[in-house]
Amino acid sequence: MKINKNIAQYLVDKLESYGVEYVFGYPGEQIIPIYEALRKSNIKHILMRHEQGAVHAADAYARITGKYGVCLATAGPGAMNLVMGVSTAYKDNVPLIVITGDVSKKDKGTDSFQDLDINTVFKPITLKSFYSSTPEKLENNIEEIFNNNEQGITGPFHINIPKDIQIKPMNVDHKVIKGNKIKAPLESDIKEVIKLIEDAEKPLIIVGSGVNYAGATNELIKFIEKTKIPMTTTYHARGILSEENKRNLGLIGNRGTKKANYASEHADLILAFGSRLSDRTTSHINTENIVQINTKKEQNHAKYFYNNNIKEFLIKLNENKLPVNNNKWKIRINNQEDIQNKVYCETKKLHPEKVIETILNEVTDNITMTIDAGTTPTYLTIDSTITKQSQMLFPGGFGPMGYSIPASIGASFARPDDIIFATTGDGSIQMTIQELGVISTYKLPIIIFIINNNLLGIIKQWQDMANLPQYQVTLNNPDFIKIAEAYDIESDNITSLEELTTKIREAKKNKKPHLFNINVDDVHIPLP
Image (cartoon, rainbow, N blue to C red; front, side, top):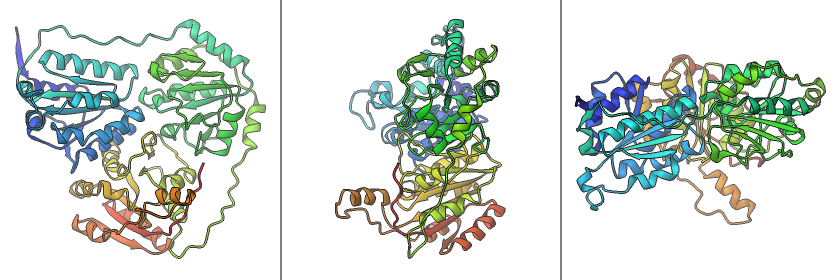
C-alpha cells in the first residue's frame, strides 16, 4: 500500500488541482491541520471576521465566476455560524463547498466540548452533507462534488472532517467511487421540443442562473439568434444577455418589467432553461405548456421536464434546423412600453428612491453591485438596467439581512478590475458590519452606501398596512462615520443628491474603500 500526504494536505491539493484560488474562512481548534495545509498551498485564504461573512463572500464569488466558492469553519459554534449563508446559497442553487472541522471520532456523540451533530443540521440545506470519517471517504466525497459540478448540478456541498482524521495519511491505492452521470439528451426529446416550438405562436424563453453555471451562455445566444424567440430572465440570470439588448425583455415575475410580464401572461409556450421556476418567477404565467430543462429532478415544475444539462441540450437543439418565430408576437410585446411618470412624495430628508437612482446613474460596465434585504432591493430592481451577468447580486430566495457587505468582498476577488457598489440599509449593515475589517485590510475598491432611515423600514410598512402600532422597529444607530474611520475607511455623511454624485465620482477614481451614510425619509416601497 502506498502512503501519501495526510488527509488535510490531500484535501487542499485536490482543491488547488480543480482550480480553487480563494478560500474564505475563520480558523478554530478543530480545523488547524487544514489551515496548516492551506499555509503551504497556492490557494489564498481570506480571513473573514465571522463565519456568516465567509459563506456570503464565497457565495458572491461563485455567483460571478460560476465556479465553486469555498469556505471554512471549525466545529460547534463555527459550523453553526455558517448556517445562514449556506441556507441562502441552497435556496439560490449557488455552487459552494463548505468545509467544517469536527471533534475527534472518539469524542463524537459523547457530548464533549463543541460536539454537535453537524451533518444533521446541514443535511436539509445542502445537496449533500458528508461525514468524511476515513481518508477513502474524503476522496470519494471530493470526486462526487466535482463530478456534480461538471454535470451542472449546482448548490452547496458540505464536508465535515474529524480533527484526528485530518492528520491521518492518505491511502492512494483505493478505487474512487464516482456518482452517476446525468444522461445525455435523447434525440426523441430534442424532436419533441422542436415540435412544441413549431406549434407555438407566442413562445417565451425564461433563462435561469443554471445557464451561467453550466457555461451555456454562448449556446443560449445562438439558440435565440436562430429562433428569434424573445427571452426574459429570473433575478439571478439578469444580464446574461444585456438588458439593453432588444431580445431581452428583462426580469420576469413579481418585480418584472411590463414587457416581460405581458409576455409571460400571454405566451402559449414557456421554455425554462436552467430555472427552478419559483413562485416569484411564475407569478404571471397562464399557460401549462411549459418546457423545463434542469439537472435537479426535485425542481420539476413543468408539463415537459427534461433532466439534462442545459448546455448539452442547447447544443443538440442548435444542431437542428429550428423554427423561426414570427414578428407579430414580438410587435405585440414591444407595444407594452414601460411608461414611468414618477411622482415622489414630499420628504424632509432625501427620498430613498431618488438616492438609489443617483447611485444607479453612476453604474458603468466595470461596476458590480451587491444588495441587501429590506426596502432598498425594490428600487434597485425596478430602476436598474443590468448589462452583464451577475452585475447585481441579491440573495432573493432566502433574503437574509447582512448579505451585501461580505458579498462585496467575494465579488471584489471574483472581479478584481471592478469597483463594487455595496448597497445596504442601516439595519442590514449591523448584521455583518465587522466585515469592514476585511475590506480595510485588503484595501478593496468597495463603495458602501448605507440607506439610513433609522428604521427597520419594511417591517414598519407591514405594521402600517395591518393598522398596527409601530413596535420594535426604530433603530438608535451608531455613528457610522466614526465606525468607518475606526476601520481606516474614508467616509461621508450625505445631505444632497448633488453632493452624492460628486462624492461617488471621486470615490470611483480613487478605487479605495469608501462609506457613505445617506439619511433618508421613511417612505413606503411600492408592493408587487
